[in-house]
Image (cartoon, rainbow, N blue to C red; front, side, top):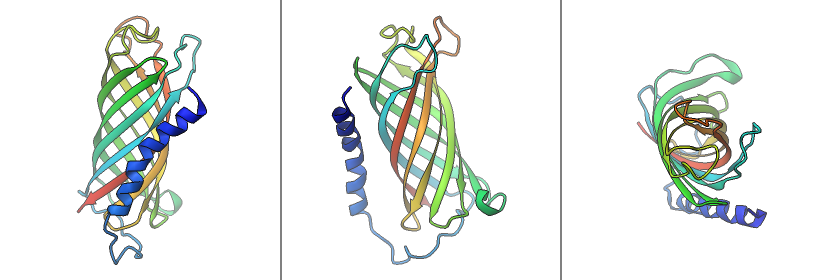
Length: 207
């Protein structure tokens, strides 16, 4: 996997998001500071990015590179909690994770994970967040890498990022995730695969 190839894949994922921003209607009230998100607000999002291997154990030998797309939905469930820089709101939702590895083997995977997100509301339009989730995943890597004996596995992930609300409804975001795929001890071996994933995203809130 060359650096040029990695940059090309990252650009191919980021380009649709950049083009979408040019097509979105900007509100006349975009300059106003956004209020906290009302409880019950639904947010749909789309994030994507390239991933690369993270080896944290001697039994993890595979070096898989690829791309992932993560459409998601969540609902805000609390008023702002706390005060000061850590003031924020909690949301629960679900996410579909679909990925493709292109080096050194070609494979595909798809999973569905519940998710939890804590978003800071202390900085106006700029909204840092932390998030995490986990759930079942199917991948045809099973039997093709020493860490994956079967096709049915579990995906656990966590990450952090920052969103910028450029209208009352639309926001762009960027961040970084760490993902772990393993079979939760249901088969042997169970050394698992770990990935790092920088991502870009676009979200829409429907009040």
